[in-house]
Length: 350
Ligand SMILES: Nc1ncnc2c1ncn2[C@@H]1O[C@H](COP(=O)(O)OP(=O)(O)OP(=O)(O)O)[C@@H](O)[C@H]1O
Ligand SMILES: [Mg+2]
Image (cartoon, rainbow, N blue to C red; front, side, top):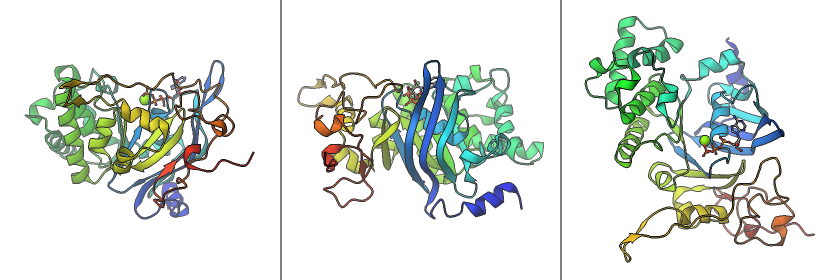
């Protein structure tokens, strides 16, 4: 029995049958010049089979660090998983895997696409060669079979004349085409999970819409579950079924996307929702955008109590004393919903 198979046995109970991934109590620490900060602090969530889970929050909230810890790609040497488990179906706890074992998981079980494809594609190799590499790392296929699979994949992601494009270098493609190549590379080994970190932010709106549509089609065809990271709630609404809202390293709200938009519970979520640009039909023009006052706190000197208290329009006494737990709100019976806020829960007796 291989080490991975043995771990899979030991961890079989860690993910339930309809889940492909379960992250439990994840804490990611970064050693920076002024000390050690928790970029991700006690984050727990599950990714269900076939679902797209959104992670949303302002810059610096810990979205990318959460994704990179699932990929085993935290910045070195400063970053590490200090606590928690990342249980992947059929593999076990990724937080405990060696670098070598993690290399086998990347691309094969979990892959990631980034915001700027130019930084992830190597300019000196053809795109055909780079997608073939992704196959060669995990499977033994003949040269001919590999080439055939790459061309099929290029076709699948909507690249015209794939045989010709196979021999192109990244700079010969447009930004949208490069993002399609990245998606082809990520999905060519049919991973259980694809992590998409702001995959369309650098693209113009028309191309963005095409890429999002493509991701949804491939998700259905390949059966990959997706974690979709973005600061854009419009994209969240289009792409995801469930959402985690992150703030300063913690999850402040988790909800089905419909519930989140219908009734945000956390004042931070409400603030984010108010800042979505939309055309006001009555005025016939875009309304002035609401912005949340202030900035995300320095993770090395967090306020006492709730991390959002300094910016919260609804701040009251308990908020500056105790950090609220992430738990279902007192008033609803909806168990899938969670919020980290004293407005929705009785604070401890002082
Ligand atoms: N290489 C690094 N060195 C030091 N601190 C870092 C590094 N990378 C990230 N951080 C810090 O870790 C925290 C979380 O960063 P992360 O990149 O996960 O944020 P994010 O939510 O992805 O933001 P963005 O929307 O800007 O991508 C931030 O406070 C950030 O400053
Ligand atoms: Mg990021």
